[in-house]
Image 1 (cartoon, rainbow, N blue to C red):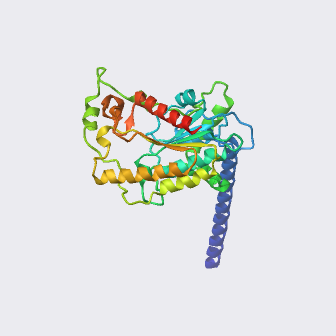
Image 2 (image 1 turned 135 degrees about the vertical axis):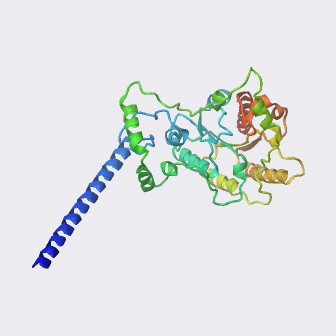
Length: 340
């Protein structure tokens, strides 16, 4: 009798627990579905996928998540791609010199894989108004022989994805619990601040100088030689191959400028060294691309120039300051002009 009662009680408890678990899971599924639906409609990073007509742009935030909004803006027909090594190239300055409205679609610490995703996003959203010019910063990261083109820092590939399911899956993120209220505040407020549409971010604002002269610590670091050729002497160069393939989806009239950004003189490869051989091999891969593709030019600032010996123009070996950026912009503009 007691054994039978005990079995009945256990069965009842099991049934109750099963019912509770089912209810909990059902509620969790409903909550997740409601969250994804809200996120999709509110479109936290202004990807343009929401069926609702929402306010343009995004609130001030990091460039990685702002890329989707800026990259689909039809008011820009020129774009700058890369990382902090091309970050100081000003869209406004290029526009003044070329007449082309540029947007900066850079993201610090990114590599070719992230840049390809961003270029692809830009091209897909500029079908009706074809891009006039694309500028790509080709630094030593682009010299890798690894065909996987691995990236080192997190990047929202899901946000720029061609796959809608991948995008929706990417919305299921803990950080969106914080972002959605901010997005709603941006959308409903008349006075909400918008992130700069052209994406320009001047990192030199944080550059410190002592007594109006050159920072001694920075000068000491600059004077130490550094290898920067990329280490790939024999190839292949999958980043060059991948960029050429990607640019086949661009209109024939789109100019492509490949910029080898400036480095301080002590980061230039020493003649006859393996570093110099690697740098030359990488340069040739992109020079060959420029020779094969119409309306393409290589702007090379990794060659020895007087400006690269001036420590006041650099904050470290590979990050130059605004006066040098203005000179680089002039060369980019001239290259675009010659392609017309």
